[in-house]
Amino acid sequence: MSAYILLFIGAIVVNNVVLSRFLGICPFLGVSKKVETALGMGMAVTFVITLASIISYLVYGLILKPLEITFLYTIAFILVIASLVQLVEMVIQKTSPSLYQALGVYLPLITTNCAVLGVAVINMQKNYNLLQSTINGAGTAIGFTLAIVLLAGLREKIEYNDIPKPFKGYPIVLVTAGLMAIAFLGFAGLIK
Amino acid sequence: MGNPMTRLKTGLITENPVFTQVLGMCPTLAVTTSVKNGIGMGLATTAVLFFSNMVISLLKNIIPSKVRIPAFIVVIATFVTVVELVLKGFVPALYDSLGLFIPLIVVNCIVLGRAEAFASKNGVFDSMMDGIGNGLGFTLALFCLGAVRELLGAGSFFGIRVMPSAFQPAIIFVLAPGAFIALGILFALFNHLKDRQPKKA
Amino acid sequence: MENQKDNILKNALILFTITIIAAVILGFVYNITLEPIAAQQLKTRDNALGNVLPDTSFDTLEVQNQETYSQLVELFEGKDAAGNVVGYAFKMATKEGYGDLIELIVGIRMDGTIAGIDVIRQAETPGLGAKVDEPSFKDQFAGKVATALTVVKGAAGAEEEISSISGATITSRAATNAVNQAVEYFNTEIAKEGN
Image 1 (tube, chains in turn yellow, blue, cyan):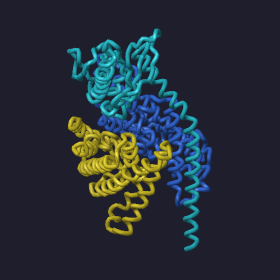
Image 2: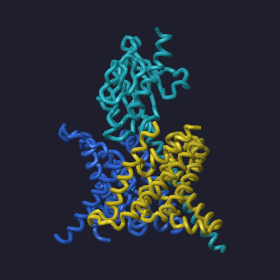
Image 3: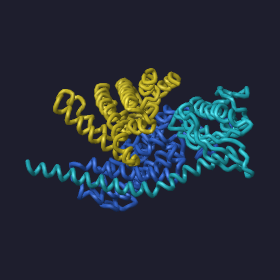
Image 4: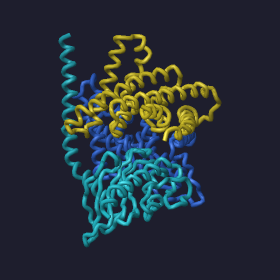
């Protein structure tokens, strides 16, 4: 049991998907202007990553492995993710218009969020079982949400600061993210 | 659509995918711990871009617009897998050190971005040139960042120690935070140079 | 309405065809690269075997009690030209590293000293953990009497201490633990019965 808790916490802070594994940087930089939108993106990603971890685990174990076509994993996983995103979009639209309004715009962007494919591949490489894959997926996604919301909070604050002209826009965001990553390095000793 | 050299230059400098379009940030930050990894990743991506642009521009009239994104992704994923298998078979050391980020070329926004914005609307030859131009532009950015991080973080260049022995490598540059900060500063430098250019001309 | 349905079907069919063609092409490429990939893996393994126990020919042995020795992948018996057993080589794979798997070969001589180690696969951070494949780290193991080794920060003093790569304790510990498991196998499974 404690191994699963460690895996979960490790995925959130120690191996933070954005700040130490460098996955999902595009939305991290692109959709972090406001805390509100960042939170929306984070929630949509959490939803998709957790589901994608489970389904790609099943696809790998039940289809690719028995047929000995594991080399097709890249195509298989990305198709799973793309169809999943589409499906989630349709289901949310039908069942919960308010949730759709909150998450709708972010959903299409998730297909190309490399954190989703990244987690699926990591689960496969590390030979995680179904429970471990799900926990790793959920933990990673929460780590993503944490990072993007924190960055959005910082960006809201620095928006009105006097920044040297060449640093305006992305450069200062990258430096800010770097300082956040230093803070997250402090978690490295947390789990051996 | 202009001559091939202009296509190349557009991708390489004026519309550099990393420094002006802010695409493909994940591999840019992740694999640039050394110059060798940076260039390896850049060239692998260039190969994928070249072939996927070529095939997508050939298929542009067959693929229905409603399913074009999944179709593009399948084409891209195919070439990524080819690159993965070839690297594994012939350059295993590079394959191991790039690791996870080879399959992730599929979701590199540059590749899908060029397919959607250029290859699906232009001729085969122009699309191939566009692929090479953008690929090399990406490689150039990875090379710059890789050089800065390897020099400061490990005191070496291409794995060969170049800094004097008194130089104490700043390990932070090969760790995650160094990637963000070094790219931020390079980015600012790029902006600064771009701002100055019109005045000089 | 009928028309729309037709369209969806047609779209799905085209997409399906593209996917099938892609899979077939990949099947071909996979078959072509299968051999070079296997050859590469054998070559790096054999090079490493030659590095840890030079001038020996190797026979594969079956691993005993696999569940106890989770990191032990392959076991080899090394013989010299006259056919005498000079030592054993262990191919270890550990997940404890910072990056993906670390695979290494550990050579142990018949007299119970470590002949040397060689890393055949690692994806640690260049400039930090990747130094696990540099002589400054690997050479520390050669000549040590095969007992449980511990990783220390700074210079190693005692016989059973290994000096950690600076800034990469996790990697150093992962590699050393793999060596320790090889040593344990040698001491409990081989040395006991053999001599």
